[in-house]
Length: 110
Image 1 (cartoon, rainbow, N blue to C red):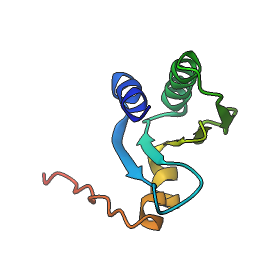
Image 2 (cartoon, one colour):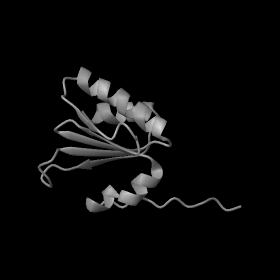
Image 3 (tube, rainbow, N blue to C red):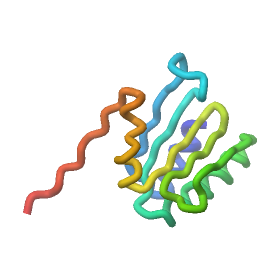
């Protein structure tokens, strides 16, 4: 399922895709995937495409956050996917909770 999720997000031009292996760390899921979309429209499209692919693969999916699409959560039991707009992802910084340090983007010098 991780490959299906990452492949779908990559095809939809998601940025900064991170897969966190939760096995042995949490009972909420085996894997967590976090990715960024540049706009609410892109986040909505990524969530919609991923939802269809996961349902086609036989997973029952619960989705939260679709009306605003600032942060969309897709819960497929063994895999949880968080899709964010950039500023929302930076604010919540879920990776830090799991000990993942994201590289800081450096502005290009003029």
